Image 1 (tube, rainbow, N blue to C red):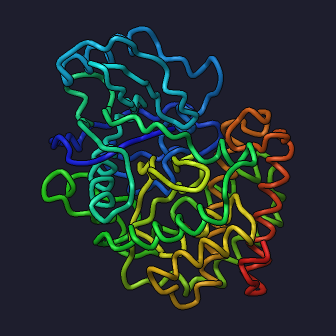
Image 2: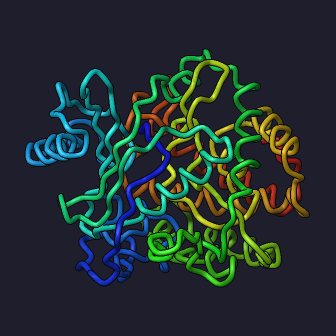
Length: 397
């Protein structure tokens, strides 16, 4: 989970390698060069190795050879062998470590999927950009996605002392009003980062001239990427009835014109309390930028709607509006993006087996179960479709 940021080690890119797609658990594979996310809506479920890194428990333990390589990497780049190297406790799709070197603790994050994805180059650049605008992110000391030294992409960053805010939220100690408003302000702030195009960014442009250019020429093109594959997967896994999937698809098509954006903005695309570090009433770092895209201003606010109620959203909207005006048709755009986000999140939750887990899992409430997560997922899809149809107040969630 924790991630970090600042001036970075520049990395040349290898944009030509391809890998044979491994089994994809029912998601039709995409055949994409590893340095391109052209046919990806959301990496975790659309990558050729779908759901890679989503295992939990003992299955997440790093192999001894990986640990040895991380130790050697730290020794080379920090000039001294780590006195201690331990698991970083991440529950996302990256392997993470905490290292103690010369009296200082570092956070190490690696991407070891078979696709040899190099999007960490983009993530590191974005972290530096938002940090320059005042968005708190961990200081990043080095990053390399070329796999010339080791067979994985990696980042070395500062270890932020504070926990992720989801832990405080689940414990009932988080001042949600203050944090939600701060988060809204930060979302509006990072939207000032200049971007071109839409969707995931072109890694090669970041590596050559630091331009954040989306791979799609239209936002509509990005929004509909893999939508039908996602709905088909959910029907195949009996999460959605065929008629319900058809109804969702028709609802989205009815509001197609909302996607006609003339320009995009920076979207975190995985904003949630487990990707925010801090105290009971203050955000100290926003982490995990590896799904960032050029998209719609309402997308990150809609992502908060995947997890939180109307009271939380009201404070987030207030914080956002204190920095940047809400866009035209923001209510309908909120519901449209909530619906699209819940669809891809449902694909991940079904495909990665999250509905079989218990309250120890970060997505599930302290007293919840996998079954309650399944019910919440279906309920939030229903609420998004109803809100879109009826143009409901987002604060009724």
